[in-house]
Length: 452
Image 1 (cartoon, one colour):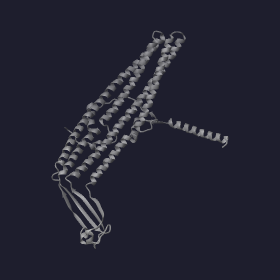
Image 2 (image 1 turned 30 degrees about the horizontal axis):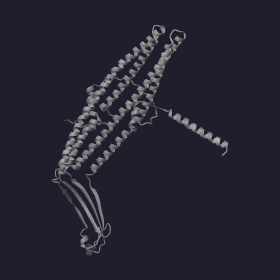
Image 3 (image 1 turned 180 degrees about the vertical axis):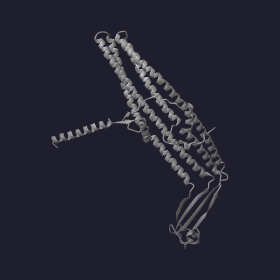
Image 4 (image 1 turned 135 degrees about the vertical axis):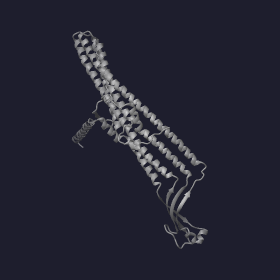
């Protein structure tokens, strides 16, 4: 290969790599516009925890299928092949013997065991569906928290950028006054230090926002480097529902409370299953047995010794474990203890639900009050900064007064956005604590509450 061709190929390769790099950068720079509803929807579709809960539901479906099919007929086939010798061979000229039995059996009465198993499986399926809703509510709350955190981090960038812009403007004023000899060099240096600190805060705020976006991508099931343009803003919308209404709604609708009630009923059915051990069992059966020297056939010329084993059977079988040394009673007692445990867990779920609702509601009210206070503080801080600037320009104020006023203004803006963030996050927490539905009608699953 000559040098010209080598250079040409190298140039083409470099051009290809460059084009791929440009295309990759262009793709990486693509931004997805999303609001909070978009993020919640993506989380519902992509989140691995929800997908895992769906597989638990599939398992419950097949468990119910197993319980129902146990009540139907079963077909079995038993086959054996033997070599015959000794005294038996002298009675018939048979060297090989094949035995096949085909039987159909069906439980007629099981003491309520199969019926209780089906009811328990039905309840388990409903409980699994409720658990999916609870999982979705948790993921929705997690998505909202990540989204609101990203909005808050974006607001902190704005606060830091405003601080940098304000200090830069002030530094221009200080330099102008220093150039004409009206202020000392220390004012310039102090303002430059404050600007550097503000720029560092801006870098930190930008990094926090990048991390928040990566975390949001992780929650909604997107690649962590996906660029998201959040279309919402943190705002204040009054919450007019009373605490008592929120608590009552949670008691009626929280998936974990409903699931706990279902566990009590499942435990009661397990006791019925255990108690069936002391009751008689009735089973119907039909069978046909074929014996012969050839597989799957009977030989009519065989001696009576073998031919008599060709038979059919139809009838009912009854079994009754009259005494099992109290094994069944022990199982019943275990089931009773499991019922009491399930009842305690159901009561605990109600108490924990009340606590979570009251905590979230209290945080919501506190954040709402903080918003009004922080908003007033921002207005006063703006006025104080303007006064400090005017006084400094007139020569009756110090540079320290201006910098102190600017820090207070930045803090006031930061506190205001943090109050908005806390309010919106608390409202999302309250929705989750109340059990606000995602996509399931829980009314059909509501059972009688468990009482001590």
